[in-house]
Length: 70
Image (cartoon, rainbow, N blue to C red; front, side, top):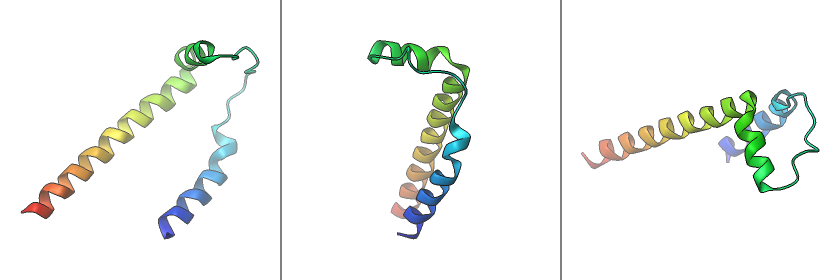
């Protein structure tokens, strides 16, 4: 529960910093949303960071499971 409260508080504090300048009125469907995400360097950096974080968390989780079995 402590981690959930901490994560929620940090995400609320950081949300204004995650905004980037620009208008999103041209994004009206899934194809335009995907095109917008793949054409913006800001969004590409966020996607790349999420992928790296995900692989890192999977590696930590698998190494913990291996150490608990032995």
